[in-house]
Image 1 (cartoon, rainbow over the protein chains, first blue to last red):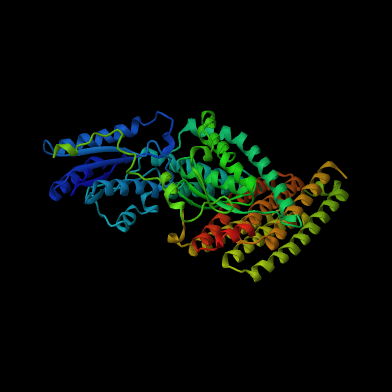
Image 2 (cartoon, rainbow over the protein chains, first blue to last red):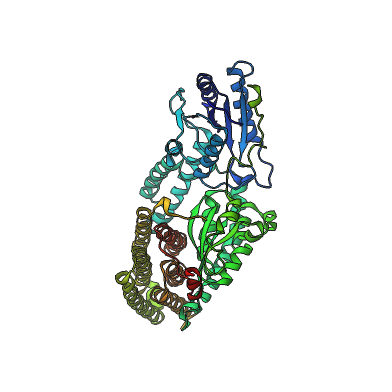
Length: 372
Length: 104
Length: 108
């Protein structure tokens, strides 16, 4: 599978994708390798059939690559991560790096308009991550044609602006009256500024009406449940803390959450922290380190007591049937009574590692390596 | 506002007193937590303790706003909660060592 | 004593109780991770009840909205702050306290 001199191109829907692909073909012909088009998809898709648009983007890029290159030029297109939960930009980058490592690629050509999702690429600098891993990366010299807001950007800006305006009005209006011209005027200005600044920051994906409404609807069920759990947690906690012998038996575990976006991982981590005896210590993508105060808290965690409601909140009813983290093999004690001895720990622990290159090639791609 | 206060004077007095007393108790509790800030032993223990004291101060501000009938104190409580959060984030951020985490 | 006053007194009492639990937890618990449990759970619920009491006491739209916002904000930020600090502590290699038997097992 090695393709020395090959070039990796991260693919995302962008106006300059075609030009970038053409440029990457030129680079690849110079370095004497093929071109590898890779699209990573966030793990929302596990158990769902919404990959079509991702496949279309990839096909578009592949078609362009074939047009721009001579016959027999190796072009491969791959869709990574469709069967995995990915949360956060670094995990996407890990997939790219794993792929590049596996195929022994020489360089990476990045579309200047490339973004993993709706967040601005500058937030988590792709370039520095690639450079740290020792790859030569290049930003394709394409004309971006000045700045033009895309329809997604406009939608995100207006949603953020309207929310900011509503919030401003609620705080200001209750003091000075809702129809006060100063409140309305300064509120509109605030909304415009907030919308303009936050259009690429506030949302992970461009919000669409259906999923947002159903998430809000389920949230109305979720919040009382969470409040009840929090109250229960506190009664237990009060008992433990005020007990003269302080009956605690702490342990630290790793759990891989079966949720696939920054928002849902945050909700999961925070509801873990607020509910009985558990506390999220660290998060790396969808891997979470969780400190439990006693054994029963750990059992609840492993059975998925915390995970199920969060999955329900973001993915709906059918996701309730997923087994808990322990059953899936996504949970592992690290420190505490259940932890295995440090020596033999290394062998069985690595199996659950998210390794982008390992299970990835069965994607939507055609593999052009054999053409050489 | 004034009319409401006049009609419910006796009941409101009780609620006010309870609020102020509770605020005083919470201040004492915050002073107890101050022991953890002094004793440590690690920076992170101290920051967690400061965070708890910060939340206590938010509670005190909220209770005072009701106890003294000064609703504008709630705005101060909101700002204080925000600052408290930023403090923890900043300390957590600057004392984090990204290569120090053992995942397995 | 009217119902509103009774509610206010009840909520204030609960708020003070859970703040008390948080303070005791901060003093008694053995390491930074378990102390964070106190900081997130008990303190958050204590603040929740206290603010609920204040919102019930005022009963006016502006104050209820401010209280609700403060509540949502604390419920979202307290776990996040605790997470940021324990994460930093863990990355610095600060040990997780475990029960004594386990300590002995590990040293063997």
